[in-house]
Image 1 (cartoon, rainbow, N blue to C red):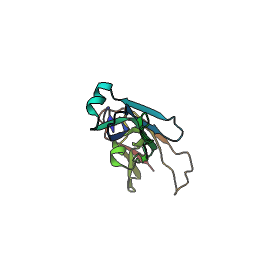
Image 2: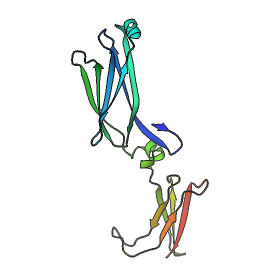
Image 3: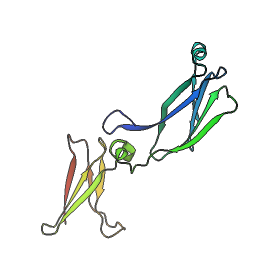
Image 4: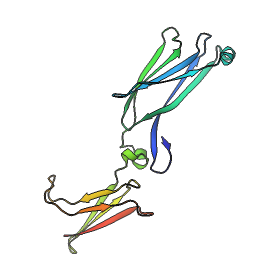
Length: 175
């Protein structure tokens, strides 16, 4: 996860590979592809002077440039440049879902806000509280009657998170 602010994080896939450098290996290619997206490849080349010095030693190559979405499946292919003995490593990775607590707090696509309510029958009021909202994002709330079917055109309330230092907003509906 890479963050620019409290609720402005993005997920990046980190691919690390270790290989024993051979004189004919000039670099490593790391390719990623997802369903419906173009395959992207990053080639890491070893300079001729470095290659000569490092022949026979283990070299670590790391790539963390691939941006992924929550629950996205990514296929990763790693191979030498040029292809050395046809050795290729391919694997599939699935990014964590939004049920992950860190993602629900920091990745915009996963931040939904939480609703809670208190039914005060004596005062004939329903207090609805919204917390953990995405900053700079407005929410529209509407109360509906009965089970799963929403009927009627109850009043809609706009909850704006532009309010300064607001952790929770409470709306009171009079029944």
